[in-house]
Image (cartoon, rainbow, N blue to C red; front, side):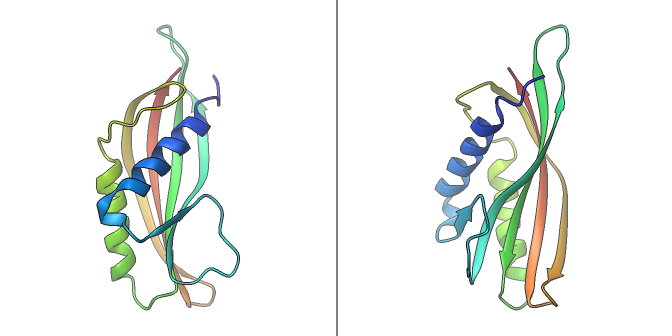
Amino acid sequence: MSYGAAPALQTAVYQLLSAAPALAGVAIFDAVPPNVTGTFVLIGPEETRDQSDKSGAGAEHQLVISVITDATGFLSIKTIAADISDALIGAPLTLSRGQLVSLFFLRASARRIEEGETRRIDLTFRARVAL
C-alpha cells in the first residue's frame, strides 16, 4: 500500500471544484482560514486503506469535503453540497500520480455547530486509486 497518491487526489479534486461553474464564487480551502465569514468549502480529513491485489498496488481514500456557512438555514449549503456531489461523481479526474479507478458518494451529514450559529455539511466520497 502507498499513501503516495493522496496529494495528487486532493489536487485533482481541488482543481475540479475550483473550475466548476456551479461553485463560482465559493471559496475552497484545505484548512479553515482564521476569522472567515460567509460560506466556504473545506477539503478535509481523509482515511486511506490498502486495496492492493495481485494485479497491482492500490488504495481506497475516503475523502471528506465540507460546506460551512454562517448563513441562516441549510438550503443554501445543501445546494452547494449537491453541486459538489454532481461535479465529483463520474468525474474524469487526472492524477499526477496513480490512476483514479472510481469515485463514489458514500454519505452526508448536516448539522449545526458553534451553538447553532454555523451550519456544516460533511460529504464523504470513496475514491479507488491504482498505483
